[in-house]
Length: 207
Image 1 (cartoon, rainbow, N blue to C red):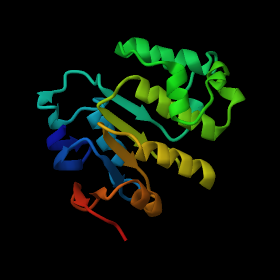
Image 2: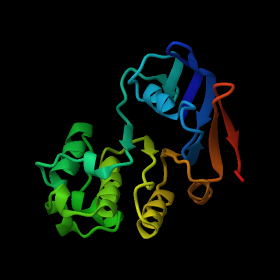
Image 3: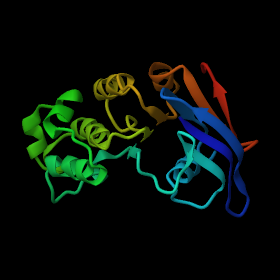
């Protein structure tokens, strides 16, 4: 369980104000208008910025962020262009001391194993985004954060990515998107960041 207690972030003014959440091993959609603090929230969870309050994973305060993985919007910026995809996946396996097989992970996201021997520029955006998820899963994360992972993709590839994510089990998944149809498809648990009160509301559905 990811537990967030009185999370507050201040820059020149308060951006997030005493947010309290308990997130179990489910998929949570997250939305909010531009500038509402979604990126700040994620940076705080990842320990990339200073914050007040506590962030606990299974009841233990976080000293580091091992157990967390992130998939970003632009997969072309997510891989080392000088290394093939297999190397990038194996690097995550090594850093997190897991025993995953890169070929099995690629199959899990619908990519043939021979494709991971290619370099990023040899693959499409849809293929790279699926492999970004495979790489994230290689680290056996307890918390997986996906920041607008489908917004740059066509409808067909969006659906493929969403179906892969919906099949993920035994992890706390936070899926950030402005697309309400995508959020409805991905989860019934929606976190809405209200820029007026600087807090996050949990709703079971969105219009």
